[in-house]
Length: 97
Image 1 (cartoon, rainbow, N blue to C red):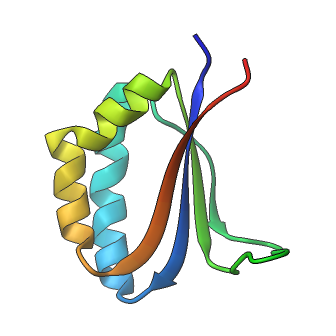
Image 2: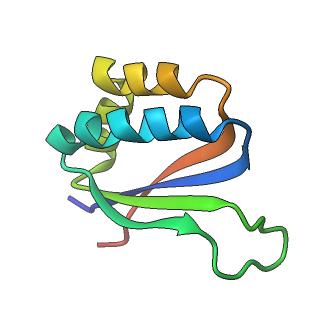
């Protein structure tokens, strides 16, 4: 079964305190599902329509595990803490291997 990658692109951070509250809850909420952070931070460079905002790439055992983690009550609580603190785009993509 191929691994999966959850890519979060922040378009705008409106409230850094809400983002920090989300981050404090999100890591522990996702860990039981096999989340492994590959990178996180502000983009070093951007091209084409890219924005120089925060990006997070997380590796998962499978697409199913990533979706299960997203829908889990603990992660939903993290999202509630984030609220309107950021505008972001999340994509889950199956790996090639």
